[in-house]
Image (cartoon, rainbow, N blue to C red; front, side, top):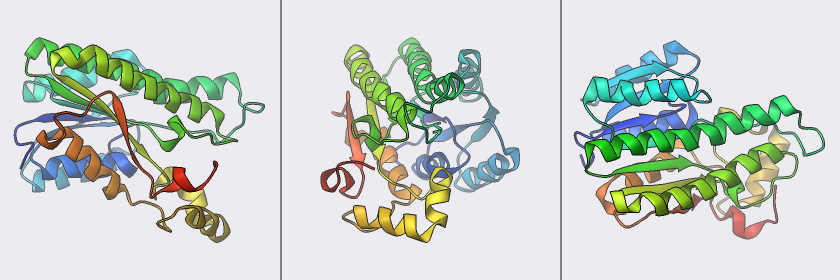
Length: 255
C-alpha cells in the first residue's frame, strides 16, 4: 500500500484509462476524487469498487474545460480528505479531423478539454500542494502523438504536443517545491476512444500489425505506470514523458 493516505484527483475518471487509473491508485491505498461529466451510474459503480478496496472516494461532476469546475475538484479533495497529493490530468477527446477540415468549434473543444484542463489542473493542484507542503505528483495523460504525427487528427496532436511542453516546463518550475510533473504517453489502447477501430476487423488488424507487440494495450497496463509514477519508486522522475506504446513509435512513420 505505497500510497496509503495519499489523496488523488483523476479527471475523466469513470471510464477507459481514467477508470483503470482510479482502481490502480486505490489498490495502492490512495483516497480518490473521481471527476466525471456524464454517466453518473458508472461513477457510482466505480465508487463502490474503490470502497471495497478499503479506500475513501467521492465523485465530482465537473467540466474540466472550465477553470471554476477544476477549482471545485481541487477544493472537493481538500474538503473531503484534507489535502491533495496526486493530480492525474487524464480527460481527453479527439475529433479525427485534418487541418483542412477542423472547425473552430472542434479545435476549441479539443484544446479546452485536453490542454487547457491540464494546464489549469496543474496550476491549481500545484498551488494546493505548495500551500500544504510536502510536495506532490502531477501526471499528465498525453499520447505518442505528443511527438508523433497522426494525419487526420490534427487538433488532437496539437493538444498533446502542448501537454508535452506543459509537462517539461511545469516540471522544471515546480521541482524546487518537491512537485514532480510527468507525462504518460500511451500508444493505441482498447478504450472507448478507439471503439470504432476495435469494432472494424480490417482496421484492427492493420493497427495490430503496426505494433511490434501485435496488440493494443489494455487500460490497466497504462494505469499501472501511473500508479508507479505516483509512488516512491519514481522519486527522481520529472519534466519528461514515459511512453507505453508496445514499440509503435519505433516501427512506423505515423498513423
